View 1: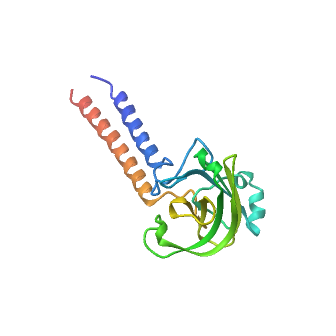
View 2 (view 1 turned 45 degrees about the vertical axis):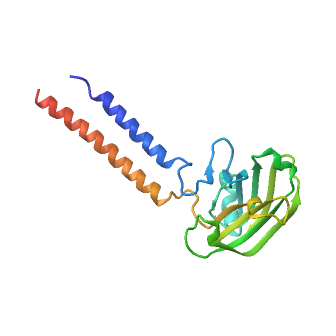
View 3 (view 1 turned 90 degrees about the vertical axis):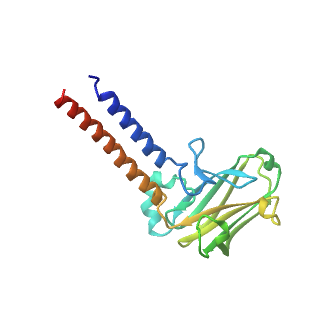
Amino acid sequence: MKSPYPVLASLLLSSTLLLTACTSPGYNDNPSQVQTKATVGCLVANDFYAVHFSAYIKPAGDNAKATVKDKKALFRSYCKNIPTTGMAFFTADLVDRDIRETPISIRVVEQEHTGGDESKAENYKDIRTITEVPGKLYPRGVVEAQAELDKNGYYALYLMIGGEAVSDEDRLRIPLHVGVDPDAKPMVTRILIGVGITLGFALVGFVAYRFMRRRNNP
């Protein structure tokens, strides 16, 4: 009789791969903004432009003193979700080299969610402009800005390729949500992880049961 251990090992490997797929950065509900291991930050794109985006936060008030003790927190980059208020530093690496020869203006705004799907830009409206950077060239391909995010809520950073007065096609919107846990997994991901673990243990238990049954009934 063949040993069941190779089968058990294969099942455990399959379960591990399933869990890895469920928790991989590319598995999320916003396919236009995914984490990438190739560069720091996230790939943010619309139909015409793409950037590698990173946000760094210097917490305000008492949180700043606490964070100074943790250098990892100071240098950690964020994507869409930012855990606390404070001075935010934004970096966008231009993927398309052609737009390095085109003026780019920047606007950071506070937004209000008007209802509906939170992943859709049309369900937000701008309620306050926090900072603006006039259009200029970025020949090195690195666009930088900073803004004081003084309260929790929704924000957006706009990159206007071509200057100030541009069409929607030339406006790249980067959504930001301040005051949320950046490490929290979406509910769908948590459900898939639970299902994967349950299936993994069920398969291992079934193979072990069949092995013991054959062993007791030669």
